[in-house]
Image 1 (spheres, helix red, strand yellow):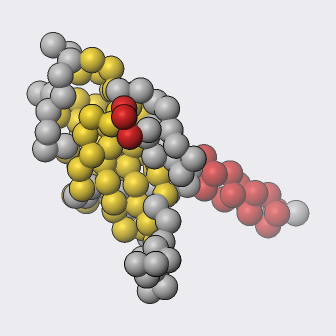
Image 2 (spheres, helix red, strand yellow):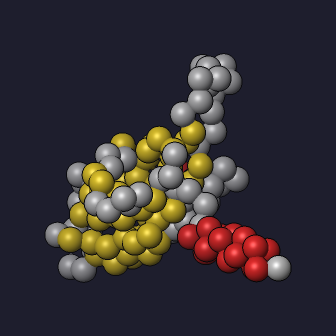
Length: 128
């Protein structure tokens, strides 16, 4: 019985952290967006910032709302955690942020590419 309770506790911890990629936080500094995230065993993809939270079926923001779409260049912080900053600046306003990642699989081909996974969205506010 104790083993079952212990296993249930481990499951609840992993579910609470969310699936990878997981965007832990998003803030702004001097009109740049700073993100902290978890990738697990995934390869980083893109950091996107949109003016509205609307998403497409694949989880990415609707293209007409995207204001920044940059290569995600992670810098390790603590074990399992990374951070990144956008190169471009944003005008004052409210925005939503997501990151993408995908598994490193040898079966990915140009005609059959591997799918990108998108993180949860975080809201940020750029002050004027």
